[in-house]
Length: 69
Image (cartoon, rainbow, N blue to C red):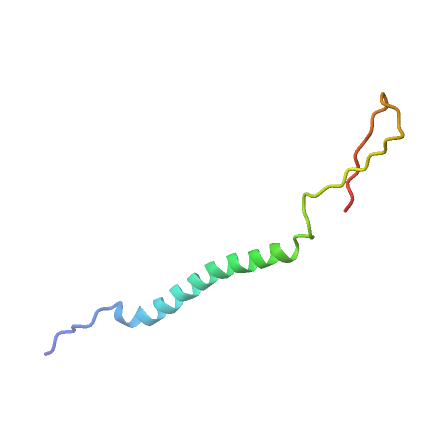
C-alpha cells in the first residue's frame, strides 16, 4: 500500500491565497477611498476665516469677528 504524502492543508492553499488577497485589497481600499472622500469633501479652504473690522467705531467698544463660509 502506498502511504499518503500529501498534506491536509495543500488543498486549502489556493483558497487561503484568495482570502489573503481579498483582505489585503480591502485594507488598501479603505485608505484609498477615505483619502478620496476627504479630498472631495474638504470644502475648499478649511480653517481660513475672514475678520471684518471697521475703523469708524469707538476704541472702548468691543468688536466681534465674523467668519464667512
